[in-house]
Amino acid sequence: REFEAEIRFYSGDDPLDVWERYIKWTEQAFPGGGKDGNLAAVLERAVQALHGQQRYYKDPRYLNLWLKFGDCCNEPLDLYSYLHSQEIGTTLAPLYITWAEALEARGSFRKADLIFQEGLQRKAEPLDKLQAHHKQFQARVSRQTLLALEESSDGDNMGLLEIAEPQRSSLADLKGRGKKKVRAPINRVGDAVKVMNPNRSSQPQGSLQLPNAPSFAVFDENSVSGPEIPTLTAQSWPAPPVPRAKENELSAGPWNSGR
Image 1 (cartoon, helix red, strand yellow):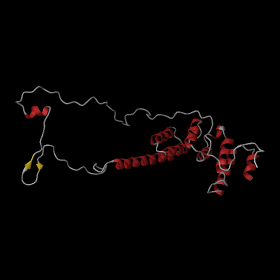
Image 2: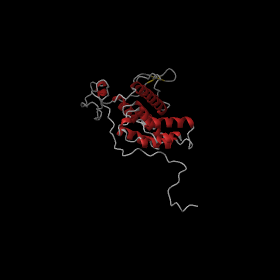
Image 3: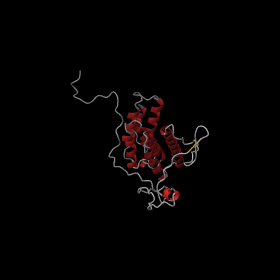
Image 4: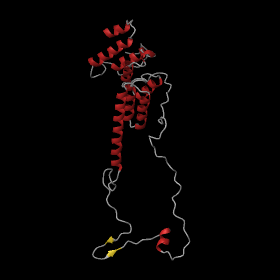
């Protein structure tokens, strides 16, 4: 009641401070969450009350409020896109870290890396925290890639860290049972026929050529000029996403029809 009264009759110049203290008190008083704390409703009221106040767009307190509200939404990725399109928190590292971790949890590693690169290009603060999370993300992706390669390889194939077994030369003698030597039959074609039979008259045959295969360029990060990573395109979101469906709420109807 004290917080509700302070919000209702507040006349200061920092209404975000009241909502921040109200949310912290709710989290401490109801650490288990649930309908008693009603944290989702308080967060929704806070973002609606402070909506459109651009003086808070670069404030870490305001971004933290939005990120907590995103945990109450069915689709938090929509909320992060909305924040990006409205330039809310785009100079702060927590936006890109939270956004990238949500994409990573869904297996969208490429998009998650793009989010990290966007934050690094904007030098979001604190920059050292963003860089540390990006390195940890790269390590996790590399480890998962190696595990996936090892699981997908057959039992006859070599592992990534195994030593290849020595292979027999193609023209070496085979070891047969007993003292008798065994030689593998060899069918020579093409230029090998001319080399082994120089006196045999034959029409010159063209060397075997592979079909024209499309050439591909090997990526070299040292030779790339300028940023090659595509930038994120801002989307026009008219309003923030709706939170999850609230419990214990009845749909509207005629007031005199119930018993």
